[in-house]
Length: 197
Ligand code: GDP
Image (cartoon, protein in one colour):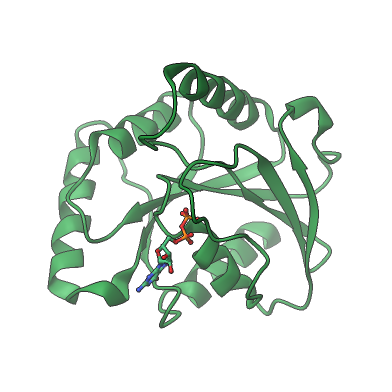
């Protein structure tokens, strides 16, 4: 898919203020610092569309970007940041869970996972929850350029193995880097395919 236009629409803290649900929507989520903003900028070919974070977990907003005038890319707040209170975490959870379970135009949740690390409980728990709710998701392993391909393959295999206990079919995954752009076309083409079907 070619990106012709990518436009910031709005930031929200309330789900009843989101844009009209009249276009297919794809959400990006992951731990703080996983490389979510960098990946959004890489796939849209815009350097500053999503703000890369200096302070993990600071922004607790749902950001909508309109792509090619026909679908929304949704940047969700990062989870798992250390420097926040329990209250903030539970507010985050309520807010995001409400968005994910109620947004009828949501086509797929892209769960970003740092390919350098072994499976982390917080990521697995989130993915299990998506499965429990029957929400469609795919895994996006980030920062592939930071280490050898063997290491990411091993971590991906471990993650998929962990999910096999819970899912009859483990959803597709992508290995990406916002530096080399590996995996970015595949990811966009997958969105294009879903939009066409
Ligand atoms: P976010 O908090 O998930 O939005 O993460 P950011 O996009 O702000 O990235 C966190 C840090 O990881 C920044 O220092 C980025 O430059 C770096 N980073 C993100 N993606 C990549 C990548 O694909 N390769 C490399 N080498 N660094 C990355």
